[in-house]
Image (cartoon, rainbow, N blue to C red; front, side, top):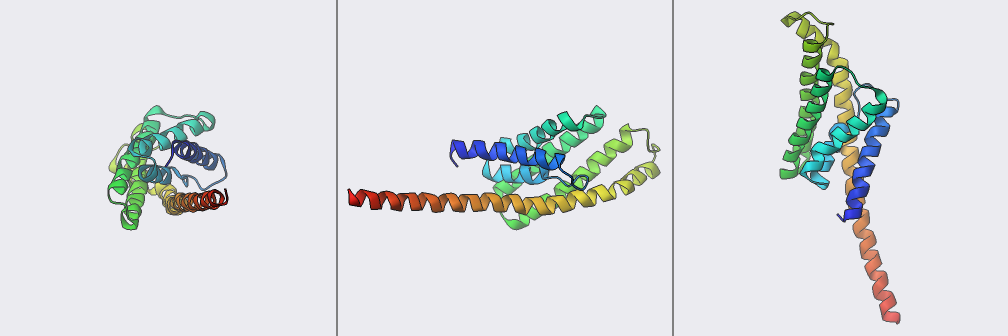
Length: 184
């Protein structure tokens, strides 16, 4: 991937992630996990962690901020997703991608709902309160899992098609150059 292609991919992924967060969507059905996974495979390790966090921060500037401890759990969860996505870079196959995608949704659900239970006044600080918090969070978990299951293969398809198209156009450009060189 050339430097320009990498810059376009980085800006495109962030813009796509921000746009989806602003658009009407199921709560928590965003492409942030997919952005981490695609970044790990195509852009490099640091981008797998940085891009989801930058996307989240840019959109939060407009959407709004809330309890910093709960926000820390959200940002920390996506940083963890970025770290997990590095496994896909090491073991690049569909099974690893599917497992990391599913695990990412589940860990996000566990971590962020625990933070909501621990730091908000809405739930009794007991095992019953924690279980109630997780129960009420299940629709959000479902939405996130659906979003991750949709956006991950979509973004991988876009990047795979982009590489195929780039290779095709490079080959076509080379053939044209040979044709024109032969005529001169």
